[in-house]
Length: 382
Image 1 (tube, rainbow, N blue to C red):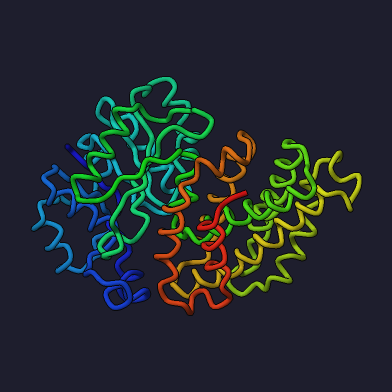
Image 2: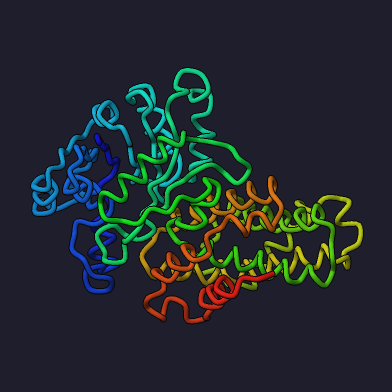
């Protein structure tokens, strides 16, 4: 296959800040460049698009080229080449800009596969007009490594299939090609719903583990209150949107240094903005209790996960974008499905495996919140 990988990976972060060779194993280069190398070594025709040559040392670039990878700085050249274009690209608008720029130049039936920096659903939405008119043949999927490529822990790829509500962003043949690519590099391929993939394999799956565990706990609580499904879903949505709004609206607040108490103050301020009038008529009603309960447990987990990410050297911007991406995905899920269906669609074992990878060093979870979430996932039964 002809493969194009966009983005070589930040080696300064991987080697100097995270010290991956010592803490996790493997050797540089890590990230997108390592993915490109492994695909080339598997016999594929691979281009790595990276305009910033300073992101790797000369020795690392030599390894990349000796593996058979062609390095280019032109995104369009890579687009014309790639049957599958894999985005190991920055968070936010830059990734969408790259996608819009290359879309007209992709081969027929080409595939854009995101990694951890954007949800495939968000990416599809950003490209929807073109995908529904001029490029109906192009598919959107994922090639989530769910660990840093180049470390021994990178043993699988999470690939996006149809969403939980049945929406298809790529054909079965396109998804099959992604599976074949992963397996050709001796990685296990997991196909999961597109609107679940970022929760399972985002940049910090600890967020996903904490939130899914929160949904499970809220479901258990609702067994006592027996709220109708629609009311229960709305209560969870209120919490999700309140927390997401805090992250979006309070950009001047440093998440890394924020205490749980201060964060909850902001949640309490935001929650009434998101609660439907029919739900807020009685503050002591079960739905309000569940809403506040979910907000509290999720907020506590977020604070811990944010501090954990800070220790890993992840930027404040990256943390914010990751939280917003994950909450937008959860919002999408809850708004379109029953909670039971959502939980049935989430591969708990993959989520737990991905999260466990990020807490190999116990000091990153000194409050035990992630371990508690993992225990909930392991014992999942409502």
